[in-house]
Length: 293
Image (tube, rainbow, N blue to C red; front, side, top):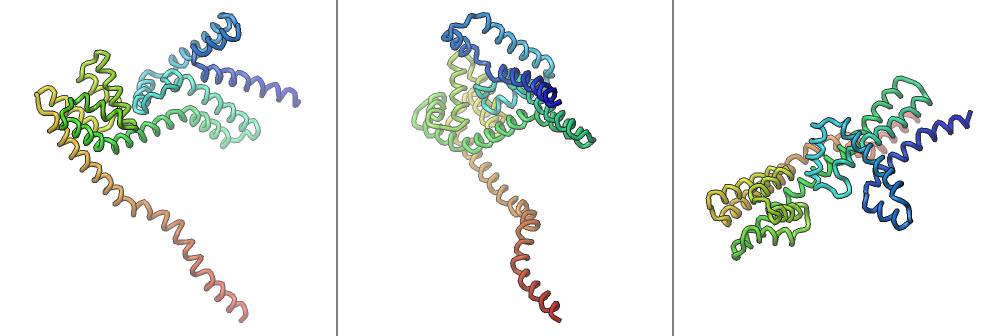
């Protein structure tokens, strides 16, 4: 009986391990180099790559187009990590769901109750949407970092423009001196302009890619200034002032929310412990006095 159980577990785990390996080994150039160094023929490489491509195509077919566009938007907000393109994210999600379903099947097989069946469905759904949660969280943190960096970056660009540099040169200087996600976006925008994209399209693409309201407002002001011939130094000065005011207002808003956020931990965690420490000895002494009587 144990042999049959081990064989069933192996039959489930082995395909899952192979598919996971195929999903995480998508570097085709590296795979070809390794196989050429080992002296393997191209036939084995073709079989592995074709299996990976077929599974990636199948994952794309079963993924709704609107959902794929939503994932692509959050990937753009997260900076499009090099190791996690859209195809790999779509390919990994069914594998995670399959792993969650296998765990749920083992749970139900051990104790077939209605609660375990609900847990199996919940584990499968959670495993499928784990990449979405992580991706959205990373994109949100990146947008918050861009919000904080934007006023200081505009000040640097304003100083460079007032010193006589052009707007794109000032943007390049701010991107080279910066270290955060906003500097990366500025450098990417300049690269888009260098490869032949118009400045307006490159600026609008940056605003759409980052999806931060403050940056979108700045991009609109720059595009309008470029269209109507307004001095870019005045635009940068007014935008930098507005961004600093907004940043101070957001900080004040967070400071005013803190007492409300601390209310529930204070009531349910700190005050009961304080009452136990302060009133505990008194209550114990009173109980001992009444017990002696």
